[in-house]
Image (cartoon, rainbow, N blue to C red):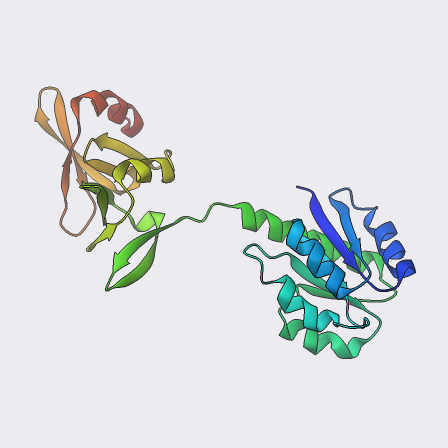
Length: 237
C-alpha cells in the first residue's frame, strides 16, 4: 500500500530535503506540499493524505496548533512533527502526534517511522468485526464471535449470543452480506448461524435435520431442505 504524504514547512529547503529522504521509500509518495499551516489545512480539506509531516515553528498557526485541526477529519492522517527543537516533544504527543522527528532528519529514524506508518495503514483497512445491537436504550457493539445465530424479526433481526438476545436494526439479508461467509451460513430463511457455535446435529426427518447450538439454552435450529446438502458439506457430515 502506498502512503500519500503531505509535507508542511515554511522553509523550502527543509521540504526538499525531506522529499529527497522519502524518495528512498517506494511505499511513500509525496502528494502535496505546503509552506504554512493554513495552506496545509486547505489542502487536507480537498485531498486525502495518510500522513502529514508537519513543522512546528511556522509563521501564523504553529504545527502544534494545526495538528488538532488536521485530525478533525473522519479518517484523519497520521501527524509526524519535524522540528529542530526537542522541547516540543511533550506538546507534540499531547496533541496525539504519531511520531516526532528532529532536524536534520536521520534516514534510519525516518525509515522506522515509515515502517510504523505502513503498519498503521494495514490495521486501518482491516475489517472491523463488530455488529451494532440495541441494548438498554443505547447501542452495544458485539464481536462477530459472540454471535451464535441471528433470527429474522420482521424488517429487523434478533442477534443471539451465549445467553442473551438483542435487537438489530439490520435485516437478516443485510447481516448475511455483512458477516463473513467463511464463518456464517444462512441455513433457513429465518436463521443465520455461526457454524463455529454448532455443537451437534439432530435428524428431524429422512431428508431434514436440525443444528444444535452451543449456547446456554442448547437452541435447535431447523435447516431448510435446500440448504441441507451445503450444510453437510461444510460440517463434514
